[in-house]
Length: 112
Image 1 (cartoon, helix red, strand yellow):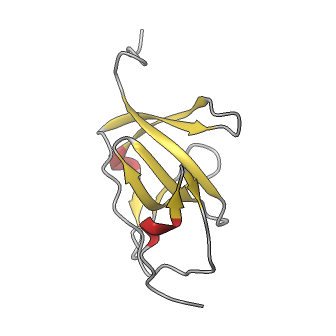
Image 2: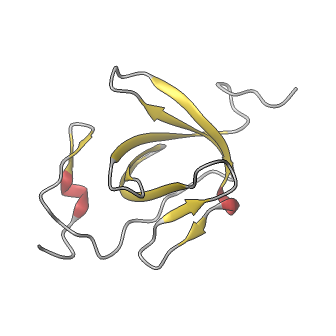
């Protein structure tokens, strides 16, 4: 296996492509203070995954992000960030595309 590969080259056409590369460090995620995490479905739709605060995420040595206390832990190992869209692998190594939508916002106006 190769180590320390430039992982941004592995994200093409909005999809994550793996070539048995093992990263030594994932990239930092620029998170709004509070945000709705949306997940891109296989059909191309964005669905809301949950409401999170950036400060609730713990950081690992390899720059992984994990948040507990909302059911199962959410693991984010970021390969690439394009504005509010992040390309990650989860704790099991499965690829996901998420979008960080600030809260409150036009899409999510706030609590009532």
